[in-house]
Structures are given as structure tokens and as C-alpha cells.
Image (cartoon, rainbow, N blue to C red; front, side, top):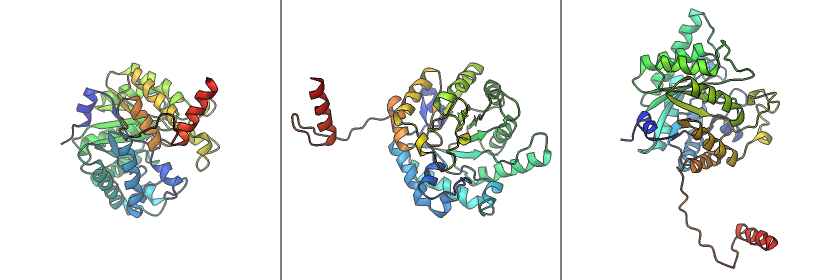
Length: 328
């Protein structure tokens, strides 16, 4: 039986996986803009292949591809009555690919239905979280992600603790300002979530590495527990530090794609500032994750390549030799 998430974190950094929903949209499987996960049921092989790519890249965790898999969100694309089937399918695929070495993380996310100080809204969102939790039974831990409001994040944590006995990781997201929609800073969110019993607290999505770093630093200073960071791999600007605010969102993001090496540099910096769970979100492909794995010492390419001295057998060698000749 593989070591659990908390045991692994106690021994060193854990590498999460990359982004799924936009990658699958770019491959033609996901509804542009809606970004819902019915693909786990309708095209399971596409999800399976992407999980396999993340495994080969050196990731320690596979996250169930159930982002936006709540009842009301699925209803927007005609699948509101398929919550159980979609979430179960997503779990089964991740578990199959993970095997005995990787961990499988459940996935809950913002519902777009939570309203502060509204009991009816609170009850509805709690019910939707419970549906997904029950459908993803068997996960090694649960990630609640993309919360713009601390209140909804705390509710998600409450439901995970009520319905499961596995660790909970809760990550916040920030758009144009440095506070949540209900008025809390990153540091305040980290402390409140940690004090409420979250095993891992952090940030995911919206910001690229550079624009996420100030939030990471603020969270790290606010509490002593395990910290997570999973940025996007789309280049943001100081005027628009969140990628969904860019004119290129949702379906013209390719020109803003960051390189694998930039994400590798992020992994190194995140480790230096005390992040314990490092991963990627939207735009982070397997190539990005492999570079992050290399930066963290988790990937060693042992494939043989017998290069002939003095005789190029590839464009790589030819151009290397050409550059050396010019330098000489």
C-alpha cells in the first residue's frame, strides 16, 4: 500500500499533476467556456491518456478529473442528472492509471451557487459537495479547489471532514484584487482554513507563477502547516494578473503559453520559499510537469542514446557541433 499524502509530505515535497480541463478542451473533448467534466463518462480514453502522460512525467498524485463536476454546473451542459456516473467514472480512471505507486486525489471545486449569509444557498452547496464526495469514494485525499470566497472553501472543508476520514487540501484563487470575494487576504484564508482543520492549504489556478508568488509568501508567513501552490501556465500581466481576465480567454490562449523551463524555475523557487505540495493547473501540460519533476529531483530519464563522437546522427548533434565550430 502506498504511503499516504501526509506521510509523503513529512518526508519531502510532493509533486501534484498538471491541468486537465483546458488541455482536453484544446484536444476537442470539452465544451469551450463551460469546461465541465462529462468527458470522463463520454470519452474515458482521453482522460486515461492524459493521466498516463502525467504519470510518465513524474507526478506523485493524479487528481480525479471531476473539476466543475457538481450538479448545477453539469446541468448547464445537460448532464445534471449524471453527477454520480461522471464522478465515479473520473475516480475509476484515475485509480486505474495510478496503480500502486501514485496517490489519487478527489476533486471538488467552486460551485457558482454559494452566496454569503444565505442558508438555502449554503444547504444546496453542501448537498452538491456531498454528492461528489460520495461518488468519488476511495480517494486517498480530497482537494477542494478554485475558491474565490473563504466561506465556500470553509463549507467544502466542513463537508470533507464530515463525510470522509481522509486528509483535506483546500486551495484559494485570486483574480484582480488581493482579497477574496468575501474580503479575506491570502494570509487570512490560510490561517482560517488551517485552524479549521485543513491538512494542506494553498493556492491554485488564475495566476501565473510570478503573480502567484506574493500570495504564496503571504500564506507561508501566516501558518506553519503544509502549503500547496499550483499556478497556471498562461502568462498574465500586471494589469490582468489572472488568466481568465485576458482577452485571449477562453479559446485563444496558445500565444500566452509559458515554457516548460519557466515552470521548472517556479518549482525551484516554490521549494525555496517553503511550499510543500507543488503542482500545476490550467495550461500545465505533461512537458511542464516533467520539467518541474526534474527541478525537484523526481525525474531521471534513463533512456539510452548512444551518440557517436565526430559523427552527427541527429539535428540535435549537428546543430550542437555547428555552434561549437562557430564559437571556436
